[in-house]
Image 1 (cartoon, rainbow, N blue to C red):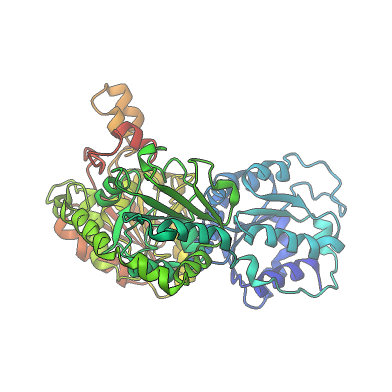
Image 2: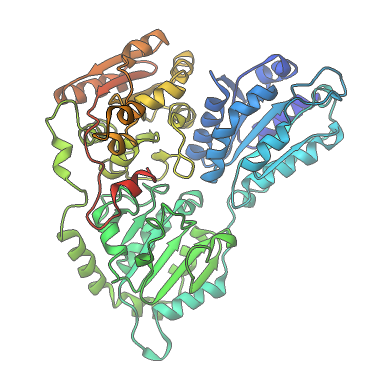
Length: 571
C-alpha cells in the first residue's frame, strides 16, 4: 500500500470520517487516496484557517479528533491562528502538511518556511516523517500525543518521497484508554470524603459547590455529575467552555461563572459562603476564575480534579489535588460507602434551602427584560431568546468571538453537553463560521446555528460558500451592528477618530450569502426574528440571517462583577 493510503486508511480506522483541506499542487499525490479511502470524505474549505476550524468543530462535537490538510508554506501560515485556538481549548486536531520545497523526490531543497518550526509553538508535537519506514511509528506517536490528556493539536509533515513510498505494515488500532482514560487517585478521593464527612463525628461542611469545566464534557461525565449533584443537593456552576454540561434549567444549576456569567453563579461563588469548592476539569484560567478573583476561594477546602496534574495548584493553592478523569472521580465519590453517604446526605435539606435562597434572591440574568426588547435596531438579547425558541433542546449553537459571545453566554441557555461551542481560550474572530460546518458533519439532522458578527464575517465569511458547496444546513445568524462590538463601548463618545477605529461600514450579508450559493434573509424588526430563523432552519443548505442590531447596548454585567473595560478584555 502506498504511504498516503496507509495514512488515510489508518485515520479512518480510528474513527475519522471527514478530512478538511485546501488542496494545492503539492497535495496532488494524495488525491487518489483522498477520493478512494473507504469511510473518509474529503471536504474542501475556502481557506486553511477555515479547514482547521472545521476540524476543530468536528473534534469538539464528536468527542474524537479532527483532521485537516494544507499545502506548502502559505497554507501552513494560514493555519496558525486556528491551530492555536484548538491548542488553547485542548481540542484534538491532526494537522497534515506537505512541504513547499518538493522539487526533488528526496525533498532535499531547503524549505523557504519551516512548517515544523511554525507550528511547534501551537501544537503539542510537530515533526517531519523522515523515512517511509517510520510512518507507522510517527502516526501512532502523533495520535497518542493528541488524544492522551491533556489533549491538543499535533502536526505531521509528509515529504513527497514519503508520500510516494510503499508501506507494508498493517495498522493496529489504538487503545480507547488513550482518549478516554478512566483513572483517578483513589487516595485523594478518600481525603476529600474525610473532609466532607469528618471522622469522629465532627461538624461537616454544609455549603458545598461545584465548578464544572471542559474536562466534564471530555470525559463524558454529564450523567455522573448530575447524579452526584442530585444525590447531595450540591449546586453546580460551569465555566463558559463547559456551558451545557449541566442543564441550565436544572434546579441545582447556578449557570455560567465568569465574565458575562449568571447572577447565581457569580454571586454564590464570590460570596465567601462556600465552604468546599470542587473544581472538575477546569484549568482555572483567568476567564474561569473571573480574573483570578480570590473571592472564589472557599472558606474551608478547595478540591481540584483534572487529568493534567500541571494545572492543579497552578492558580490557587489546592487543599485536595485529585489527578484523574472527572467521570472516574465522580463514580468513586458516589461509591463512597453507604454510612458516610447517608451522613453527608443529612445536610441535603440545608443545602437545598441554600440553593433555594440563591434562586429566589433574583433573576439568573442581568436585565432579563432585554430578551423581550422591542427596540430597533435589535437588542442582541432578543436575538438570543428568539434563537433559543426556534432551536430544539438538542440543537447546537456555535458562537463566535465579539460582543455577541457575551450576550449569548448570558441570555442563551444550554441544556446538554456538546450543544454549545465557543473558542474560549484564544477567541479568534470568524472561527465559528468554519467550526459550525465541522459540527454539522457530526450532528447530521440535528439543527446547528452559528452566531457571528459583521466583523467576523469580514474575516472568515467565505466559508459560507463551503457550507453551500456541500449542502451543510447551518443557520448563520449575523448580529450586524456596524461595529467591532467588543471595542465599540471603549470608543463610543471619545472622538470621531477613535470611533472610526471600531466602526464598520454597512454590509448586506443576505446578499453576500446569495452570491455564495446560500440563502439569505434580512431582519430589521423584532417581529421578523422568529419567522426568519424558522425559515432559515427549515430550508435546504445554509442560510444567512442578517440581523440588524444596535451597537449601543451594554454588555451583560452583574453588579458584583468587574468593570466593563476588564470584562471586555475577556469577551
